[in-house]
Structure formats: C-alpha cells, structure tokens
Length: 150
Image (cartoon, rainbow, N blue to C red; front, side, top):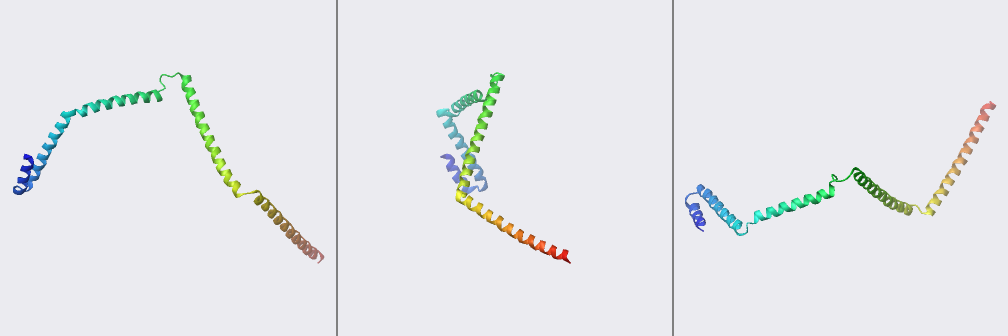
C-alpha cells in the first residue's frame, strides 16, 4: 500500500519521473507476490520434475513402438512385408469402393432400354447413309456413262 501512496504523490508533483517510479514500485510488488507463490507450494520445481518423468516415459513408449534395434533381420523384413500388404489391401479396398460408386452411377445413367434405343438409332443412321451412298453411286455411274458416250 505504501507503493501506491508514493505513486499517487509522484504523478502530481514530478511528471515524467513519476512513471519510472510507478513502474519500479509495481515491479517490486510483482516480485513480492512471486515469492509468496513460490514459498506456499514450491509448485514450479515439483511440476517440472513430474514433466520430466512424463517425457521420459513417453520416450520409452515411443521407442518400444518404433525401435527395431532389438529385432533380427528376419523380423524386420516380416514387418516391412506386412506393412506393404496392409497398404496394398487398403489401396485395393479403396479401388473397389470407387469402382462400386462409379459403376452404380453409370448404371443409373444407362438403363437397358436406353442402350437398346441407341442401338436402333445407330442402325437407322447406317441404313440412311447406305441409301445416300447408293444414290450417289448411281448418279456417278450415270454421268460416267454419259461422258463415255460422247
């Protein structure tokens, strides 16, 4: 509380210097409050040690999972092959699912009646084209005959 009283007086009388005094007094207050917290529980040191223990145990767990140093060459190869098989199976499964999705959408687009209708249309188109070709060939033949007669 004495620091608060000093800062009040300084702001009226001293002007710019008072801000420096205010910041010093608040810093002193903060330091004092830090000491009180540290003394009551000693929390920082305890929590730091717990954190260190946790990180070490995490490292051990990670090593057990990923470390192959204690395995034989055959075991390493087996693990690699199993991993490759799993990846291949996942790829195949995704491909099947995609094919099913794509196939189902195509079957909706093209029903049996639609396919049959398109076949009939193509057949009619071909028939028309043949008829036109026959007419043109007859015309050509007639003109060739007329030219050869001259």
